[in-house]
Length: 231
Image (cartoon, rainbow, N blue to C red):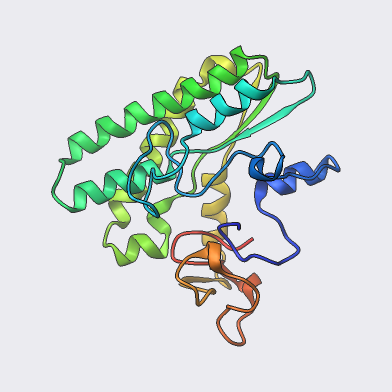
C-alpha cells in the first residue's frame, strides 16, 4: 500500500525514477530492494503501532540492505526521511512535553543522523545517491487542523537546511532533490484544491480510486489525505 491514491497509473516518486530506467521498484517484503515503510523515522522506532517511529527506521532499513547485499557500480540509491520525526517532535511540543528549544535541538540531532546514514551508503560503495528533502509540512491540511502551520513550516525548513549543510562535502556522490521547492510551486497553483483531501478514507494508505470524494477529479487535488499528496 502506498501513502497516496492506490490503483492509479501514476506512481510515487521513487517508482517514477525507477521507471525512467525501465525498472520496477519492488518492496523488500516482496523480494525487492525498496525498504521504505510507513511511519518510519530516521534512527528510532518502537512507538505504538500506527504512530510516527513505529516501524523500521531509515537506519535499520539501510542496515538490512547492507547485511544482505552490496551496491553495484551503476546502482542509484533513493533516500528520504525525517517527516515522521518532525511530526513526533511537534506532537510532543503541542502536548507540553518539551519546549521549542528542545524540539529544535532534537531536529538538529535527527538531521545529523540522517546525513550520517546517507554518508554510510556512500562509504559502503554507493556511487549515485539521490536524497529528496521534505516538502513543507506546515502547508498540509494536517498542520492547519493541529494549529501548527508555523511550527511545522519552521521545523521542515530547519531540518532541510541542516541536512543540506551536513551533505555539503558529499557532492561527488550525492544529489539533493528539492521537493520543498517543487511542493511550494504546486501549492501556488490557483486552480488546485489545497484545503481538502480527495480521499474519504482517513489514511492515504487505505485510499483507492473507489474511496474518493464523489465526483472529484484527483488531478485537481494536492492532498490524498490530510498529510500525504496525490500522485
